[in-house]
Length: 513
Image 1 (cartoon, rainbow, N blue to C red):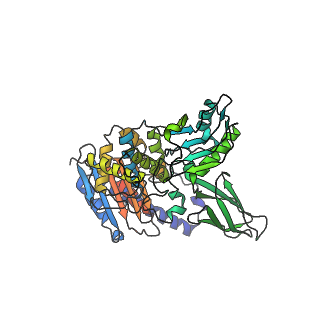
Image 2: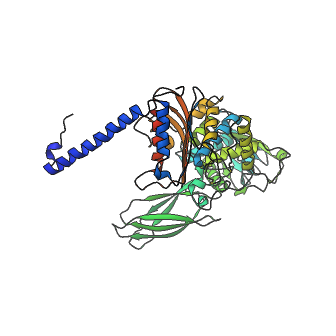
Image 3: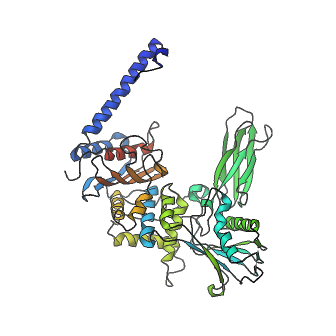
C-alpha cells in the first residue's frame, strides 16, 4: 500500500519510522507464528498455559484455572482448580443459574397493589393505598416518569381518582438488612452497594449535577436528578478561576441521607455528574409515585409511609382489598439485565427473592431472605453434583467473603449448558468485544465474538468464566480466577485473563488428542 505521508517526514525521523515499523512487523510476525504453532496441539497448549501462569510477575498472586470440552467432557487443562478464590462478580453466574433453574425463564415478579378500603362509585378510596414490593429489579427507564406507567394503568383501570389516606410503601417481603452479607463500609456509600429493598427505583441511583458558581469563590450550583430524591446535600464546593483543575466528589454520612459535596470547578467548566446511592429507596419510590399519580389526576391526600422489616403491616392480609398487580418482564430478561452489565443490586434482589420464596411457616423469623437464598444455592449445587467448593454470603459477588473455585465454576457452566434454560443463560453472558462488561475487551484477535463469559472485578480480584469456541470449532468451557495480583502500571489487570481467553480461542487442536 502506498504511504501518502512519508515524504513529509525528515530523514532522521524517517529512519526512526522505518525502525519502528520493522519492530512492530517483527512482533506481529512472532505473534502470528506463536499462534500458529504453540496452539497446534493439546500438549503445546498446556505448555503455553503453564509458562504463562508460572511467570515471575505472578509470584505473589493466586491462580485457579480450569478448561474443559463441552463436546467430549474431557479436561484440557487445570491449575489449582480446587483452590478457593474470591470470584467477585463471577458469583452472578451462580445466582443466574439458581434463579433460572428454580423459577424458570418465564417467571415474573408480581407486585400486589392493595388498599384498606374498596373504591367507591365516585373513584374514592377512603383509606390507604399499599404497594407491596417483591423485589422487582426492572423499574428503570430512560424517561423517569415512564417507570410508573404500569402503576398508573392499574389504578386507572380500577377507577381510582382519590386516595384519602396514605401511600404505603411495603417492603416487608424481603426480610433482612438493606445491605448484602459482609459488604464493607465503603460499599454502603457507593452505587455498587446500593440498598437492597423490596421496592427499588432506577437501581437506587440518583445523580447530583454540579455546575460552576456565578463568580470565583462562590459555591458551585448543585441540582438533584430526579428532584423527588430524598437526599440532603451539604455544599462544600468552590468555584475557581478558569484554567484550574476540576475535582468534585461526595462523601455520604453513614446512616443518614446527608451527602457532602466537596471539591472545585473552574468558571468555564462543564457540568459534572455524580452518581450517588439513594438511601431509604422505598420512600423515594413512594414520593415519586405519588407525584406521578397526581400528574395523571389521581390524588393521594395523605403522606408516604414506609413499612420495612422487621416491622409488619398493621392490617391482616384478609382485611386488605386487591386493586391489581404490576408484573415484571420474564426472568430471562431480568437475568440478562444483571449479567451483561454486572449490576449488583438487581442480582441481589433476584437472589433474595428466590430465597424468600422458600420460606415456610416453620422458618425462624430471624432467618433472612439472603440466608435462605444461600441455602437454596447450596441445595441446587449439591443436587446437581457441583463440587462443594462454593461458600457464599450473598449473590452479587460484592462480598469479599464469597469463595468458589475454577473447578466448581466449570461444573456449574457445564451443567447450565444442558439445562432447560441453557439458551437464556448463554444469551445473558457478555460477548467479547461486543456488549456488556466485555464490550471494550478482546475487540481484536481470535477471542472477538467467540468468548461468551462473565467478568468479575474487585480491588485485588479478577475473574473470567464462560464459554469459547476454539479455532478447531470445539466448544470449550473455562474458568480463570486471579487473586492478589498487583499488575505493573503498564498492564491492565484484565489483559492477563483476556490473553488466556484469546489463547483458548486460537487453539487449533482438540481435546481428544
